[in-house]
Image 1 (tube, rainbow, N blue to C red):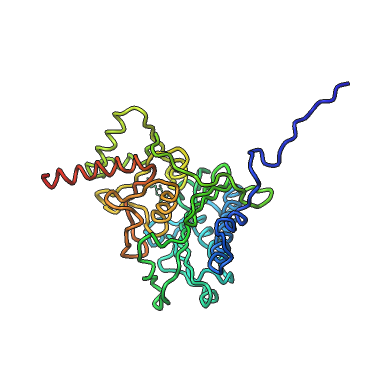
Image 2 (image 1 turned 90 degrees about the horizontal axis):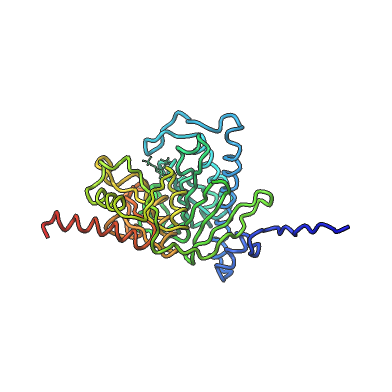
Length: 349
Ligand code: FDP
């Protein structure tokens, strides 16, 4: 009798070492300085928040009181969803008694939230969008969380977070978590961009790809074309250009993180330009566009508001918005060239 040979199923089917997020961060830091250890501990807390949000989302439709609106509106005037509140609180609670982060600022809170017991030692601020793309939550589609870590400068005695009104170049780390078919965390601490997949059976984020590089050009353009007649002529012309040239394909999920992730992996451009009603667009600088710009630049891509790099913009308030054109170098530059042409023409040059 011949015995049937069953192929050994490797624990991790992809040919890679099983590197956890915490191990990876320590390898990236190459140092055991107090600052390196802080950054590593902060990243691990963010990962914990990601796991808690992911667990809640995976059961959302099965549990009472998880989906739908709270009936409140946030500081942006948007209707708040129950998942927004849950995820916002999760990020706060994972940093309580951590001694790491003194202050958190998010889309859901008008002013920064202080954790006074951390403040004597924790000189960091976490900026975050707890649930980005929340219109997708109730229909079981992908959403994300976006985060950035900044050093706190000064004591912020009035609690307004004025020291946060600086450009994005000082971000110590940034990234996002995509809650899709799997949960994926993508981060940078200024040393390349790396992605991790959550293995729910282990409760660990496992390295998926190291040093991700965004293609220099890609086929995808991702934007809400429903706003076409609200845009400047320059953006309308760019859109007409992609309609008339072969090799472009439109993709837009209504959730920024998922759309950016696609572009990071496959190349292309995401646009959320200003509109007639909202010249600064919709997306918030400190916890949406600046963290994503930092990450995409680290992957070799580009992020602009049409006239200058997102990372050079200094916000005038905590919840300031900025137009966003982000993705592959070539594609972002092409959009910028349409904007410059229009400016030149309207100046009569
Ligand atoms: P949402 O308001 O659903 O949280 O962050 C804002 C955001 O989603 C992005 O995730 C998304 O790309 C964009 O708004 C969608 O806005 P439009 O519906 O105006 O296209």
